[in-house]
Length: 455
Image 1 (spheres, helix red, strand yellow):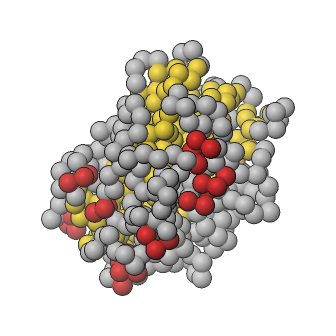
Image 2: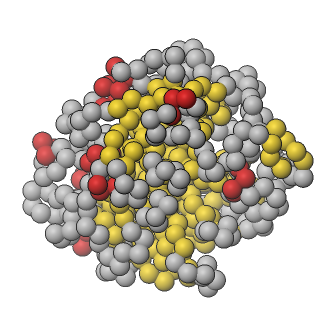
Image 3: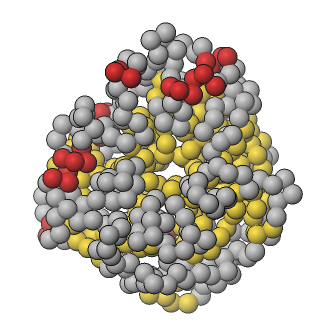
């Protein structure tokens, strides 16, 4: 069995289903989309929520308007999510809620009138903005939800984020609203949330990590460098080099990725195939100044200095010395891409350019029935990427798409209601996949024979 760790070993040879397989090279061509059986055909869910392969099942552990332990009700628009081990039997989920000030009018009375000094921002009437996070304590052994409560409020459109090596959750605002919008604070920041918080955390914006339309974050456990995506059609890919490992509040340097010898490289492939699937490109990084930019122009500043452009950077998953991130509408058909980055052995050091990091277009979708608008992503215990689709096109249902180390696609699950799948993350023991159904909020726990993969 290929382990989650083995999926991201890097270029070389991987043990795959008992065979020695050369990893990637050119994982696929732009003219052909390869598929595999995966976990087998999906079984129709009699409850018309989520179709899964035979042997797999889901349990709804939390849903919209369910009363939580703090007396509030489960908020809507559940998005990115991280999973943390509490003890041998229990995990803590930190779940984002992508709510905006406009959502206040639709909320239950208690949330609609929530006033607290622990809100990052509030309306002119003092009501906490509804965006933020909630924490869930779930027992894997008894399959019960033990506790659930708000852990961050006062933010806007908490989209995705990322788990840190020091066991916190980075929750990212996908909004650049300002006090001119009838608020008291500027937005577009990252906040750090402890999974062990027993209630609301102090909301400290990590301003040196940049003010922009944040999407997701991934941290290199070796260096503490944080890699960041931006959900814009002309987005950049960023990294944040902290002054001190694990102490993001102490600041650092924000930078943007440049393709070496190709200034202002366009990876989107919208007009032409500038970036071929499987090819590697050496990279370098440029400093971004004035990270709190009030004009929401960091991507323009970086592009002017030569930074590469990406098509709506979204979810990231860190692996073993490399990571993958989605570009939601990248590609010639604008159906989505997955990028793969391998840091330099000297990443972030003065001699980095002697052996630069490199980036690869790992996958580009050519068929919307196989892969359409990938967003959040994680890795299965079998060592494959598992990507949440986030699209509202003529295809009425979103899916969870599996991607093998060779770039082959398969369908793992199909959502039967028209909303997004989001926040996919596994328990540390690999037994349980947690998944958010965006709206109306449902968080489900999926179990099954993860090792029964058919090539």
